[in-house]
Image (tube, rainbow, N blue to C red; front, side, top):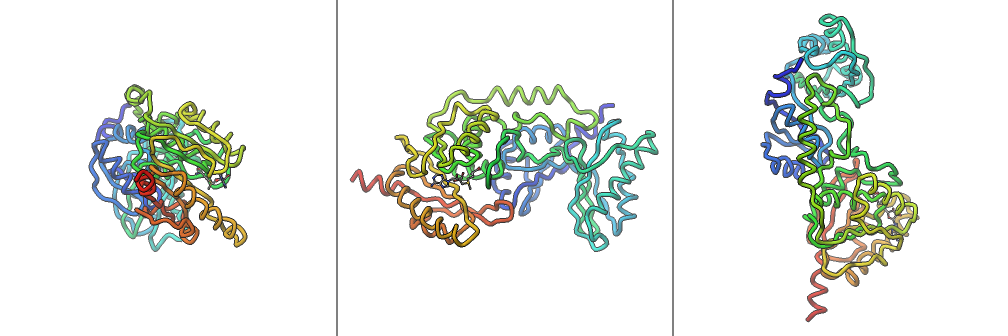
Length: 391
Ligand SMILES: C[S@@+](CC[C@H](N)C(=O)[O-])C[C@H]1O[C@@H](n2cnc3c(N)ncnc32)[C@H](O)[C@@H]1O
């Protein structure tokens, strides 16, 4: 049965992201024509139908999960939660034979372990389906089919359908992640923060697994990140409109650009990293837009015409590493000054002491979080040198 109210009823939707991401998420959501109802440190709230949620899953670059609200109520303890969750018409949402996963964010005095809240919620759904339809859905931790999200703070409970399932940061192209890769959604936000959209060159030495260069190529080509993925939780809900999904994909493909006004260059000192980056770019379908090379960052070719150069070095943990990295960071300052005139320089790091070694004045310091590490994207205007040289 096609569940009209689910697919076409406008409801509150929450899009989650990494800490520090909401300003980018907000800009993306507004540019797609959706309102911003509220925002928090790691989410924004908008509104729309399940069909809109489908679209957001396809197009959003910086969000992790699109949650569609189906019920709000008050519950003081797990029994009240069970009763209220049982009153939801789950048989209208979950098809026969589907697998169910319940996730949660719980901060309420009667629950010490959020897994217990998940279990009560899952039992309420399964018992309801057994009573109404005579079967229980299989359930477990896999987020690749139907996913229900419980948000419970104090007495306020909000029940969402998580329309994404696996987080949207899992685009599907990073088959070889290597050491300390940047999350795809974070890399997209970093590129959006630079304002680069394909005009001029983008040079990314120390490319590691290639995430920044790949996300830059996807942005510059106007390629929807969701085109790379074939499975989303919304596809497993009752009434999933496959024709709508195909139409949305077709429209997204129709606006992909077929030329760029600059080069994308990605290099790394490690041959293994460079090969991994190339393979990841191949999976993402952008390898022919990126020039890969194995070299020290300071030997990376800087094409004429300017653009942006972006470095994401290691931040270091142990003392010996820090001493070595001090030299690397200092060298990056010299490299910026001597070889990158006419470019805007960017350094993404979680170590602010090391960043001081660069020795250049920062124009902007944009806060981000990489997992739980507070980071900065530091912007250096390197035009000054070129003007002086010309003079
Ligand atoms: C933190 S990782 C970059 C991660 C990358 N942003 C990603 O998403 O996978 C730092 C990279 O710098 C490279 N690297 C370290 N020293 C280098 C140097 N002197 N020249 C070029 N690359 C270097 C390492 O091989 C490593 O791949």
